[in-house]
Every structure is written in C-alpha cells, then in structure tokens.
Length: 197
Ligand SMILES: [Zn+2]
Image 1 (cartoon, rainbow, N blue to C red):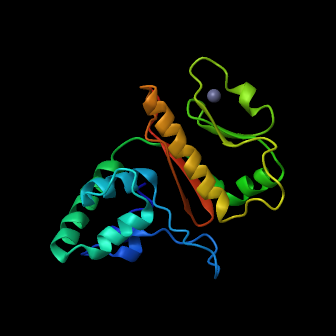
Image 2 (cartoon, rainbow, N blue to C red):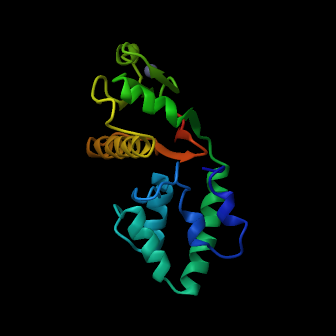
Image 3 (tube, rainbow, N blue to C red):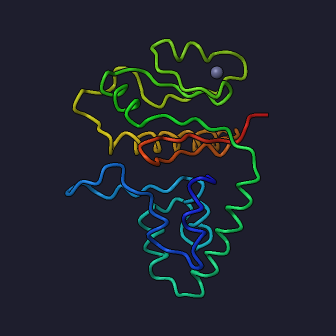
C-alpha cells in the first residue's frame, strides 16, 4: 500500500483522480478499469458511509458529490490510514500482469500460497502447498480459459474478484484472511497480505 498512496497525500486536498488507479492499457470502448485495492476501498466506504461492499464507481461518485469539508476530513483520514499502514508489516509478491495473462491463455494453474509467500505457475502448484500451515489460493484455474478469453484488462479484475471471494469465504468460516489485497501498478500485479503468525 505505501507505494500506491503517496501520490494522493502530497496534495493538500484529496483529488478524485488520484483515487483511481491508472488503467493498464487505456483503450477506447473498454469499460472503466478503475480498481481500488480492496483494503483502501473498504476504508473509503466506511469513511464515506457507503455500503461495505460498495464498488469503486459507487465510492467515487459518493466522493464526487461530497462537500469540501467532508473531502478535507476524508483526506486527513486517508493520511492517517496511510501513515499507519506504512508502519505495519506486509508480505508482498510483485509479478508482471502479462505472466498471469499468459498462464490464463495457456490454461495453466497459478497458485498463491500465503504461508510460503510465493506464486507458483505450474500444474503441480496445488500439490506443493498441502503442507500443514500452507494457505493456497488458486489465482488462475488450470485449463479454464480459451485463448481469446481474457486479456490484460480482464485478468487483474478476475484475480481481484478471486481475492474478494477468498476473503468472504474465510470470513464465513471464521478464519483470518490476512487482509489479502491486490492492485495493479505499471503493469505489475502486487499481492499483499499481513504476515502469517
Ligand atoms: Zn505453501
């Protein structure tokens, strides 16, 4: 998170444009590629009084209609949030978005393990993380895609949805989800989570 946030905190007031992540490859005719990291989105939803499951678009439109006093308050809250986050320990994996796109096009399994702090691109990936304490998440299912199915715009979105489903499922079972989050910056997909105890 720290690398993502400074852009919006250098400014005295919150800029809405700064909240939106840059599109991976801007293209006319494709829908908005604005994707906030899940933790930041949840934080903003709480600050703005939106539903916890509010989408990026809802949050941005809430912020767009807020008055200056509310925006200033929000900017201060985000600054505190960012400072707090910068002092916390996070585990991170950074990989090129392209490697996930290729795996998907080739129908190749991609598994992230929170315990091993590793992303594996291999058909054996799921059997490698059956050790006691491993927390594997299938980011790209094996053999699931046709070659034309998902491109650079879609794959990060699918992965973020997978992360959201993982969090929801873990919560439903009363298990920690370690604030697992993901976002795209400069064609790199960053996965981050709190270190496992
Ligand atoms: Zn593992």
